[in-house]
Image (cartoon, rainbow, N blue to C red; front, side, top):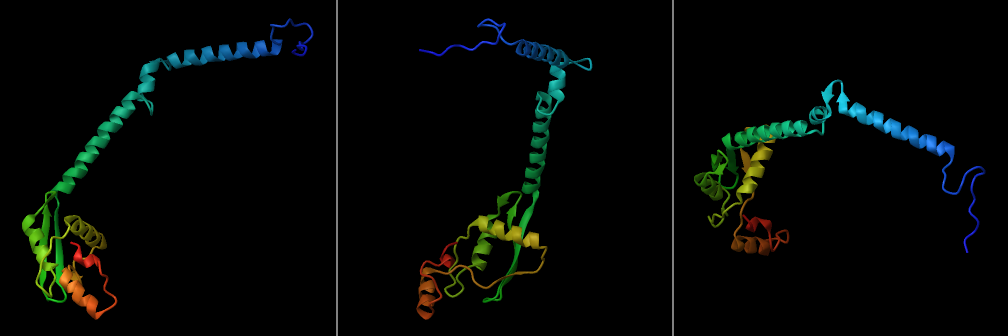
Length: 181
């Protein structure tokens, strides 16, 4: 059985306290006033004001158009550049400046020359280097601001050369990264 319901003196069971009624009425009035202000912002239609405001439809449309134009400019610049590396192999004494990328596409003749420059010089055995590695080297070279030759001390190693060097030294890994292009 439920306990007795406590009601303030002078109120029946379904009535709210006078203070609560007044607060509720004020909230309703304030809400109507805000709604009226939203519908007429300095003589503008609310839809127009919301479209131009950050977060509105026109704002986002303009932002997207700007971003698309910016992206197109960046892509155009990336495709327009020529990437070349100046390489000097210290064991063979060979020097070359090789263009490996033109207008956003890898130059197959340039890649072939770089693959030969970075070959296993002991066995004269070239490999296919990952072109993304060349992009990474080019970016570091460009960021450094250098115009000097990149000195190659060690590059590709054939499995036979790696095994021979491993027999001579404990510092050579069995699965050396030198054997990967």
